Image (cartoon, rainbow, N blue to C red; front, side):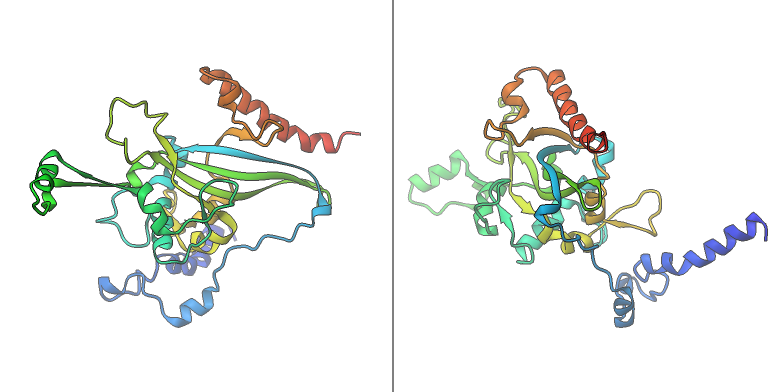
Length: 300
């Protein structure tokens, strides 16, 4: 058997997997049947996120918690941002922000918090003031002062959408597992960051100062939701990957902006101010310190 026959055999072997990954598109007799799968297909898939292994506290020889910022302007991070316009896109393709908002609204995602320390929970009703702005024009105030009912045309409503998300902030822990003898990473939380909705259209304000964390999601409880939501694979659309796989595999570029420290977990910007280059160098220093930790474990 030559190499051509080997390639053909491999392609034939992978064909059923590719067909299933297209969400029944080759078996659909009508457009409405695309994405509709039979009960037999669902039972055969048995699709669920890969479970985390149990890690005993005694097995953690060393650990460090860090916070990173994932800039959505970088090309490698585009899968977290697009698509922003979902009118002409199928329901199976959504941005990470849309996945979060949909599941917060329908009640499937409940572990939503104010900050990255996960001490105060938030419901969708509590987030509405952060996610949308309702303002009244001068003509609307004139109607109110005249004792008239305000017209809807004099009320300006502005809601944050997926297109407004500028970055994500993630919290994770690097730890050395002495039982397995390797350095590992565990993602703990993720937060979308957007301009403050109250100042989003105000050009007089510095965009860097207007960014706010909308909410923090406790990542372990959102894994099944993120596993069901697929990311577009530009190399092979027949084999999409899940958001859970993308984030756990760290298929993104993040820059450290804070680490746990004795100064109350202060950020790099707090002790290196007004110098973006030195802040990046400090972030690289922290990253290299974590990388060198595994090598130091094996140095006698």
